Length: 275
Ligand SMILES: C[S@@+](CC[C@H](N)C(=O)[O-])C[C@H]1O[C@@H](n2cnc3c(N)ncnc32)[C@H](O)[C@@H]1O
Image 1 (tube, helix red, strand yellow):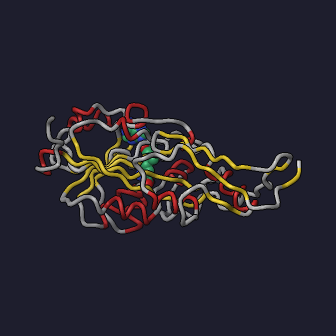
Image 2 (cartoon, rainbow, N blue to C red):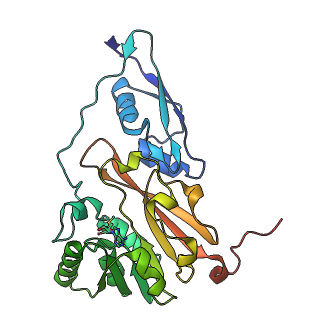
Image 3 (tube, protein in one colour):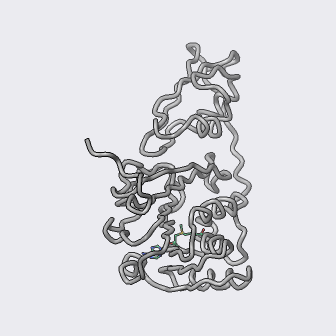
């Protein structure tokens, strides 16, 4: 097999209809819609980055059209930055470093909450809680792992913000919390490679919809593979995709979906009309 030398046509299949062309442009670095005709090295990079990617309940396929007897060039990956440059808190364990929201993403997610209070149900080392507190919100932050909760406490103190930190299982504690707060959910994605595995509300969040009734708005940070059709009923849902730096383990940027759900009854007009 010889390396292709002429421009290669690339077809894309499986793009989720729910996600707009802006995200495709950001992911692909191409400012036109597919099919693309690209130099072989660039086509190889795009295949390495996108082919097989699970995205919003779909799976992308890139089909290069190559002359017989030719193949795409090999792609060399940069794995030099283990945390992808995301470590903006001073006290992190390995999981905390891996799962920490970037400073920019944490600030964007926090901006969805009007206040005055918000529950961060899976606070980890505190990235999102700290961003929420920096907006002047009262933050009740829950974390199952006592050692990680202690890191969140140290981070909050180091950055001069106040958090109401509680150790426990968020799924058990939620029903005991006063209604009327916002709710931020960043449950564990399942470690490296999680973005490639299908996931949905049941497997990722595992909180029964009736337990969410008193919380509004709700923001869920989910991996790109999250199946948007599994979002529980009773809210209007919108989502944005955030492309992060390359993952420690590989070739793809971390792509988080920030999914915002607002209760119909509190928004007044957002409920679908019958019939
Ligand atoms: C993805 S991390 C959160 C990262 C955080 N948003 C940040 O930016 O720093 C998820 C955290 O949820 C915690 N966790 C897992 N199951 C939990 C549960 N049932 N209740 C509370 N916390 C839980 C894990 O220990 C982990 O620290």
